[in-house]
Image (cartoon, rainbow, N blue to C red; front, top):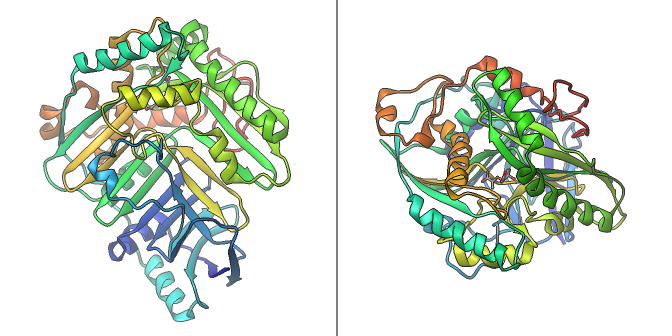
Length: 471
Ligand SMILES: C=C(O[C@@H]1C=C(C(=O)O)C=C[C@H]1O)C(=O)O
C-alpha cells in the first residue's frame, strides 16, 4: 500500500502565471487545462508514479479536501512494435504520475496542492504559495519558424492503401495522419507554447507533458471521457469543414457539413461505437440521434455529445480503455484499422491521438484525445494531424483538411492573435498561415452554434451544440 500525503489550500494566484514562474525548477511538467470550464490542473515535479491507483491510500491535509491529482499520458497504440519517433522515445512508460505540486482551478476553487510520501512540511507549502502569489504576469512570445513540407505524393500512397483496404472490405473507415517537421529560428520553451495556446484563440483543452528537455503539447477539442461520481460523458467528433471567413460564411459551411452524406457517415461510425461501449458498461445512456456543430477557430466539426451513468464497479481507467481509440482517430472496425495504420503510416504516432488526462484520488477525472498536438525539443518539432477516410475520399481534399487542422498547433507559435512576423511569414507553408483570427471571432466561437440558425442546447461547459448537450 502506498501512502500519499496531499496538502491542499486555496490561493489567490493566477495559476498560469504561477506555473510559468515555478516551472523553471522542474523538469517534469503536466498540464490539463480546459479553456472553457474550470477544470484546470497544472503539475510540477514527480512525487511518485504508480501502475495502479488500487494500492494507493491518500491522507488529505490542509483546508481543502482535494484528493491527489494524477496525470496520465498514453500512447495512441502502446503495443505498436514499430519504434516511436525519437522524441517520443524519451518519455518513460508510466501510468499514473503524481506531481509534487499541482496548481488547480476547479469547482473547489483556485488551489495549491503539495504531494509527498510523508507528511507535508508546512514551510514548503507556504514557500510555494508565496512564490505563486508573487508571480509576474506572463507575456506572449512569437516564435518564427518554417515548416519542412511533406509530399502530397507520399500522402496519396497512404490514402490509396487506405482506400484499397476499404475496397477489399477489411475496414469501412480509416483515419491516417500526416507528420510535419517544424524548425524554429531559435530554441523555444514549453512555457512559450503553453502560454500562446492558453491565451490565444485555439479552443479546447490545452495539454502539456514535459519530460526533461522534450515536451508534447497541443490544444484538443475532443473529450474522450469525463467521470464525476457515476456521471459519465463522452463526445463523438468526426466530420470537418472550414471555419469560414465571416459568421455568414461559417453558418453556410456548417449547414453544408450537416447535409453532407460522406461526413455524416464518418460521424455515424463514431456515434455507433460510443453508444455500444456505453450500452455495455453504463445505464441511462443518452446519445442523440442527430449531431450538432462544434465551431472552432480554424475548423468546424460534427459533434454528438454522449452521456450515461456508470455501472457500479466500473472505473474511469477501464472506460478510457474501452473507448480508446474511437473510430474518430483509428477507423472502423477499430482493431483492423489500428493494424492497417501500423502498416501504412510511415511512423509510430506516439502520444498523438492518445488518451491524455488526469484522475484524482476519488477516481474522478477526464481524458481527452491528444489531437492538434506536436512533440518538441530545442528548435525542432514534429506536428501531427489526421482525417477520416471512407470510400470515395479524395487524397488532395483530405491533405487540405489536415492543413486546416494543423493551424491549431501552429497558433502556439503566435505571440498575439493577428501577429504575423515578417520572418515567419516568409518561411511558412500554406498550412502555417495562422494568426489572422480576431478576438471577436473567438468570442463568437465560444457558444457552439448549430448548423441551422437555431441553437437549441444549454450547457454546463460552454460548448453548446444543436440537439444534444455536452454537460
Ligand atoms: C484526426 C484528427 O481529427 C479527428 C478527425 C476528424 C475528421 O476526420 O473529420 C475530426 C475530428 C477528430 O476526431 C486530427 O485532428 O488529427
